[in-house]
Length: 162
Image 1: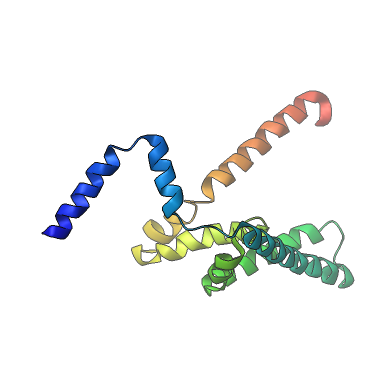
Image 2: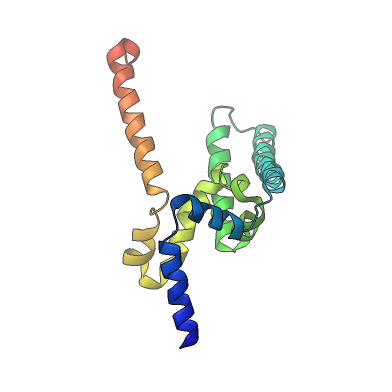
C-alpha cells in the first residue's frame, strides 16, 4: 500500500511542475545517446548496403545485362535481399546497431513492408498479413504513385507527351 501511495504522490508532484521544470527533469533522467557513434555506424552500414547494390550492378553489367535494365534488376535484388533478411530476423538485429543506416537504402523499404506482414501473419493471410503489410510503407507508396501521376499530367500538358 505504501508503494502505491508514493507513486500517487510522485504523480501529483509531477502534475504541479511547470513545463520547464518537467523538461529539466526528463533531460536529467533520460539516457544519453551516443550521437557520434550512432552516426558513424549508420554511415558505415548504410554505405555497405549501397556497396552490395553496386556490386550487383557491376556483376549484372559484366554478365551482359542491358544497361537500361540494370537499375531495375538491382532494385528487385536489393528489395528481395532486404525482405529475406527481415524474414530471417537478420535485418532487425543489424538495424539495432546501424539505426538510420538501414532505413535509407531500398532495403529499408523492403523491411518496412515485410516486418508488419510478419507481425500480423498469425491473424491470417488476408486480414493479417496482406492487410497489415502496407501499414508503414503504404503512405510512401500512395505519395509516390500520386506524385508520379501528377508530374505525368503536368509533363503531358507542357508538351512533353507529344
